[in-house]
Image 1: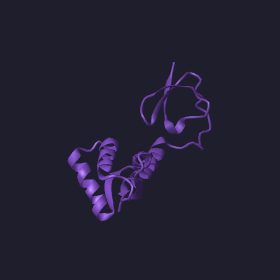
Image 2: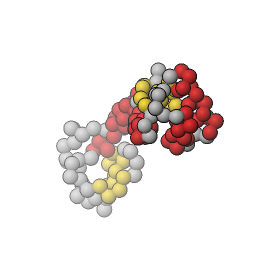
Image 3: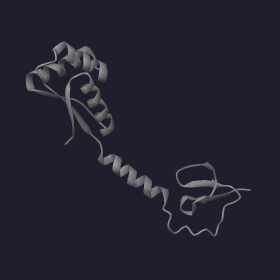
Image 4: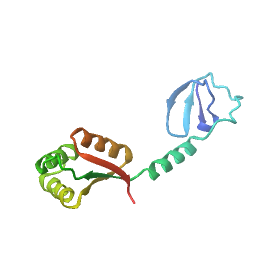
Length: 133
């Protein structure tokens, strides 16, 4: 026999058979309805805090900087390889780097921006990330 309770009623050490959604869990027959759960929190509060944190983290810009070392054709190759850009877009961004000293090559979530900047570094390009304004 099992009993369905809200997340606010979850106690430490209670066996959870199946998680149905973000606020309802199914417990096994060892569930203790007298368990003191005042210190526990509601799942929806955590989800709201997490969503707010994620919303504040978007977006970030990936910027490629000009350098005297890499050939223009190599920069085009790297942009195509890392971002999957087509030839014309990669060439346009490379010319922006060459003529203006930098180019905004992507705007994305922070983790993805850091990953792309790291990939660009492994190819020898100078890249930074900056929170979009």
